[in-house]
Image (cartoon, rainbow, N blue to C red):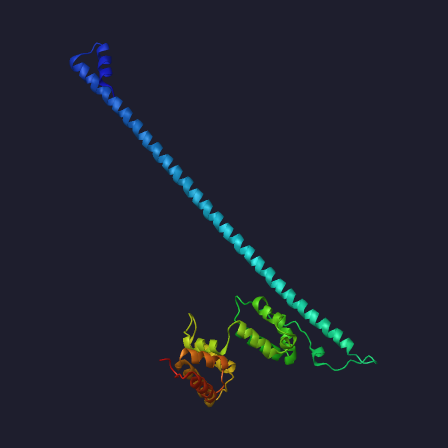
Length: 302
């Protein structure tokens, strides 16, 4: 506000003294009000611009979140589609393997035919392949031990001969489990016990593995008392089965003694005993003695 200009304007109107002072004060007050209103407009404009910038930023952030979510959904959908393709490919591979095996058996059967057209007996040629009405095994989501038990119960209910079990199980395998089956020799692939043992080893479901599960098991969230007890009982049964122990008091006693004997030895001797897997505590001590004598050692490291 320029007071000199206001005073000059007042004098130009012929004012002086009190009249000039009142004129200057009124005109000065009007100028200050205009300046204040101008400042208020500028402040409102700045606030509006700031709000607009914030809205723009929020909108960009919201779009980024939506785009990120959409990209994640797309990635999950593509991954699921790829997984479905892998499962289909594995199922097709298992089917082709089985068809090739059946074709080979048919060719062998023709070659063994007698002059009169009669086929010579051959146990493998009578293996009947059936498509089990069970979902395929997926190593990422299924427990192999539980799946095999389910398969065995189903096979028993269908009254399949055990010689039919391997080929029927192969039609249900995918991923790593199918790789195990495809890498077995023909003889091993037709022996259910050998196939099952190979699968259990591949997924580390061994006697030592179930022993560790039994010793470290804790109730899971939402698991009832009877369910937890049943799970512990299953771990113990599988430990005994895979350790080839007897489900008797003496058999369980021998199994526990072998475990404690091995755990109490030095690391080298314990590894030596686990590699040889003695079936009784007596056999374990008979193996341990020559080992210690040859090395001049003791049961524990000193």
